[in-house]
Length: 520
Figure 1 (cartoon, one colour):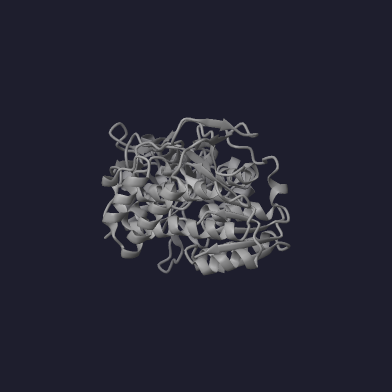
Figure 2 (figure 1 turned 135 degrees about the horizontal axis):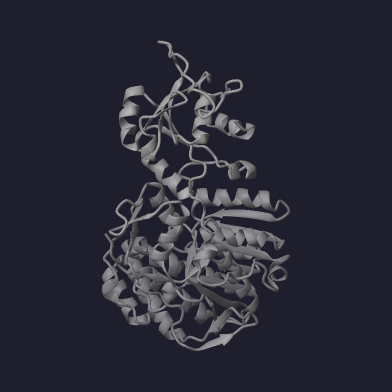
């Protein structure tokens, strides 16, 4: 038996010592297993696969002092009832009986030439027996040093799900625009906010202020950034963007040059059920931070927005459209501060997005829940989204709405299918009833669209970057916005959801008020 394979076997548990000059079954009569003593404390193991590797494994285990092979299992009917290396070969239908009879605690898959999908399916099936399940690595795995872990769901490359070429990692002018600047990132502990911070510290800013209302998330990103860039002055601030006194003091005391406003409640169903708090955080919070930036003479303010702000049917989308209109209005009367916003689709890998959700469902054995078989979304990777936000800050002239040419929207079902395949599993449906993971349709949730849009109008302008476009969109006048915000503030303070619904229907483009639910 090759030494590398023996080492791999040792990592599976137990000290494996091969018998000296052990012959193969084809060279001599089958070897007999060591006599089982009444006080034998070795762990009984079942070997799945009676081929050459399985035979070598059984021979090596015969004199091991921790593991005791008791039988083979193999899918090949011609091997059934044979005795190989002194161990009887059984069919897969006898596994449960063998485990009960011998008290087996571990099953070893000895099928290194099998496909990953085959091994993953077998390991999932065997895990239901309550036994530990291990797999022998293939020789390719041994050569490359890749450890074999059952149920390993290899991370799918998010770029493969985009349906387009990824935005290049290096964008012109980004580093110099933030070098030596004093920067505030709101929502710094979130998926987008944290990545903004990671990319900003590589630009060597003079200081980086992190504002977030989540203590744990803030602690995590602060610790990470201090390790990444100990030379950058990092200041974590625990608090809400709705606290005007806190935000005003931060802007003036820290002499902020650039604000990247990523703080927002973003999960559509959650905001749908908590409409008042969603509007307070996303709208009033944006107004608070944007006004403070203007009063403090901040050079640039960039709002992180979403495609759900376009003709929204959800409270979350309506709240982000309100936030956009606040920024658009301030841009028309703030000569000292350049206000802009960046609108993009779903972010792959962010909290609550399809990749971590589907991965968790696959790990549990399914099913994957899908709202509609035809639902589509525009997708970006987190690094892409952040690079776009940072670049927008360098291109902004005031009131700009930047969008990325994101190609065709992607069917969410296709992402689910690719993730199932990447996990080495198969779809279980009517055509393949023996598959591993089922997809169930749950129906669109309140406020969700079947298809999202990126633009309110059709007018687009180019920018110095060919993949980034500038939308020309109308917005409320200053007087109209004052009226809308006054009514909105009244609805929030009185927690009047009926009034809130009426305001959204009056002021937001093609909002469908009936899609908004009462708060529970």
